[in-house]
Length: 459
Ligand SMILES: Nc1nc2c(ncn2[C@@H]2O[C@H](COP(=O)(O)OP(=O)(O)OP(=O)(O)O)[C@@H](O)[C@H]2O)c(=O)[nH]1
Ligand SMILES: [Mg+2]
Image 1 (spheres, protein in one colour):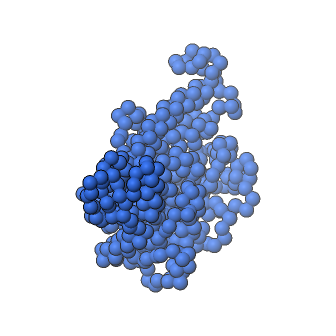
Image 2 (tube, helix red, strand yellow; image 1 turned 90 degrees about the horizontal axis):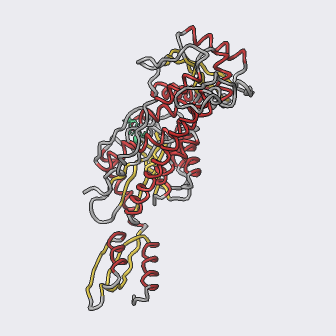
Image 3 (cartoon, helix red, strand yellow; image 1 turned 90 degrees about the vertical axis):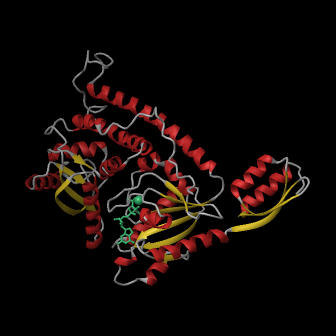
């Protein structure tokens, strides 16, 4: 039997995301001074520029690999790339005029029609760079948003991504508050001769955003109801950097077949499955992965999806130890948990992909787990996964307490809560009620005792 395996009900009236229609419109305006941007069937041909202050060549290479992976994941082809040290960012163009022209020339020479910078650009920096480079420019946030949109397969995730994406695109519409467009007097939908075309686009985009936010509110409500309906059963969330192997581990632990692939942000929706089939109720949740500099607006938009993490009783931090940068990925994961207000929840470290290691850095693993329990395994090793599952369940069991409570037959609501939240070890009927021997989290048992007292019923 599966608990809560049903997805959050989809709202029929929720509008579907528009498959990039807004982006096309905004891009038309954003890049209208350059070659018209028609999206080729196989994506754009892109030149990637990794900029940063890190001097370790291996870390710089790993960061370049990450952004090129993201560019490929958004469906583009990488024609060339380079790494640049950026000691003093230029306020108007980030790179400085000379560098920008040099890079654009190299990009053109290898056939690229678009420049991707692994940095956050303000809308005006982006415009200035496009003018200097003579080609469209995309920054890290734009790429991550595109990847999210590409992988969003449910209405809920599409609505969440599209809100973040439209909020990103809006200030990037050329002409809004910056230069005066040709006036659009008489154009259908415009508010007469005073309104410019880009202002009209911005207004339409605001309308779409309002519509999406209404839909998001409905999703949030039903997600909240669903979480409340689960009662106080123990919840374990799998968290970690993208590609760490969270979904693979979830599949191995629950005999599921959720999609796990070697590409960033494969999972965008939280999925929960029952971990134990009898006895205590333990739910395991797979969550959206983290990444270095995950855009703030995506975090805000995915707030209710990420609430699953905040409300978990135990966090399992999954780390791909075969990645050269695993320690910094772990640090980023910890920072994200702090930002989400989940840093005080008990945790268990899983160092995954052990099969890819030549040598086990035990001392490093022990230090990285900061005194919390940890395990090195491969999600592809069934015996190791089975042992890990037993350990997880025993941690959950240890956090449980037992107590005997007397519940009168008249306290029907409390009785229902008991059967929802506790494991009933023994039940002894008496003339006025049931004497129950219960197992549950200490706080739940305490609360039940209080509630029984408050209702002035004998214990
Ligand atoms: N060799 C090896 N590969 C693994 C292991 N665990 C997962 N993988 C592979 O790593 C890739 C990413 O795995 P996922 O389970 O999708 O990773 P994830 O953490 O869910 O990633 P996101 O959903 O993007 O956050 C897939 O190609 C898996 O097959 C492992 O123990 N060993
Ligand atoms: Mg996943």
